[in-house]
Length: 338
Image (cartoon, one colour):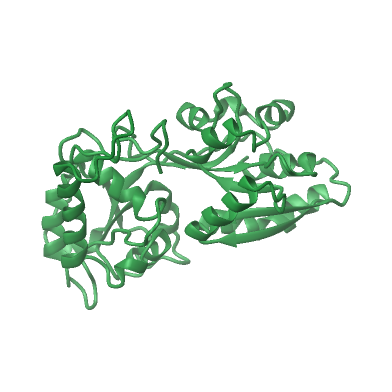
């Protein structure tokens, strides 16, 4: 998750950043004239919740029917890039992130959205957190994507397992401390592994946690003048550490494990710890789907050489320039992010 403005940064706070931006229901009360829009979005739990709520709330209030295409992260990135980059015009709204926005606005592929938000008296644009607004704006300073939620990264763990083993997880752990703890809790319960770290290929899947580990080891993918650094000592050391930790104490089937798989692994007591996005906390604390709800511990993103090592990311709603339903699409985006 990185571009010329480096969305993944070592200094991001580990606390969850929720883009509430709400004082009203955004699109509520306006007539959609029976229109229908096509929305392409990533299949994260919060997005799936929005899809379930849309018909009984947004469509009921506006008359606008929403046709969802929900895909896993890697598939979503391929699909949305194909549609927007080729100007295919299949979708009126798509979820993208802070990586795409500055590039795609420069290419003229996205509608500016700030003006729509300014016209909606029920939407408090000033309530959006500045780092997310900056990451979702173009070089002209205008907002081109509406943040649905923002996140950093943190360590999440099963408190009961740690208590049973007499382990206190530091609030600001180092990666070596986490590796040592993973070894101690590996096998703490039948079939339980020490930690889950994404292994699924993809710049947004494996690339997210691995890059923050590389950063805190003192490495980077590129220098500011775009000289590749993947063969640097720091990059090699970080990558070997990550791979070795997963091989020794990580989840089974790691090459197929992304955000969703690791969320399931921790919530279903298949692993004792997980380093990933702060947005996962809501799902982990949901007793309807998590076996450890109410028993989850949290710590800052582990470090090595830096003071912090979280990432900064925001999933956001964007409107391709090709849409012929800009008014209806904007109403949906304002509702879905309010």
